[in-house]
Length: 376
Image 1 (spheres, rainbow, N blue to C red):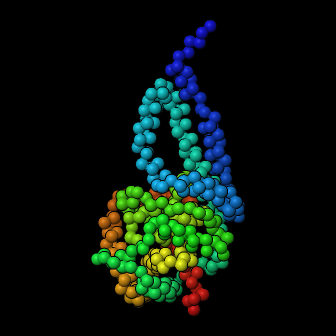
Image 2 (cartoon, one colour; image 1 turned 135 degrees about the horizontal axis):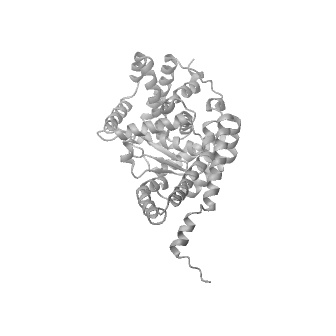
Image 3 (spheres, one colour; image 1 turned 180 degrees about the horizontal axis):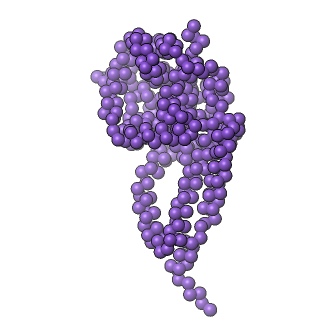
């Protein structure tokens, strides 16, 4: 007897069955959810997993994408509208003849989210719940006084003024200029990470490359200076911001790529790594960015002390700060920034940081703790 099943009927029968791969991905997501719960309960296990399991996943993703000359994550983001149209057409043609098939299609789409969840939990999540950086570095982290903020700021200003004599501040805007390409900056940051990790067991280190974002100018409206995309393993940097922001931001995203998940800790590792560099512009970038965090905290704590320390900045650095303010004014107030802030705040709070986006500013406590022995 001949088979009377038509190709269309056969396709519909296949649509009713969830592929084995999708089932395995849902199983993997369930295991990942349990693993994530264990992370939240055990800092020791999180440390072990981050150092012995997650690092291999981060390295693998980085090795797979580092040779792509552009940001794969940015490319995927730009393809989302095309993918949505294609999915709608596929669903309409093959999965909308019954509620069962429609549900099957949604389950197949859900398996894509399972991939994202698995990559996040296995490669990045333990960094949020491991031992804090102050304990790893042997620092005494406590509430800082206005006097400590002032003295630490003075130390940074002294180093900044010394470095400013070695830098270029051309043009009418008064901004400094990074005297080399992004590729050369990346090499210098790799060298700095080599030096830092030679004497520290955390974080992990391997060769990678920071990727400039092609749509950096539109990205500036979100106030995002850089982002580590854990699902592609890439450290991406917004290169529309003034030059002095870029090396420090790059070092920050590279810290995420190496398993430093908390924002204040990524800021601190970026600072410590940059200060290992033999390049004056790399160190200048770190000093000025961290000084800005300290100055903001000092302004809130004691405006007179803030005025005293800001008055010690060299004319070149004052012009740098003025130029940055003028630059940022065009992006300061907009809906995209509000949405970005709210989204990032909610994400960070969901990862055990009740301070949300304010956790970036907590690098102030770490910096003061680092310099405390020199404040006496």
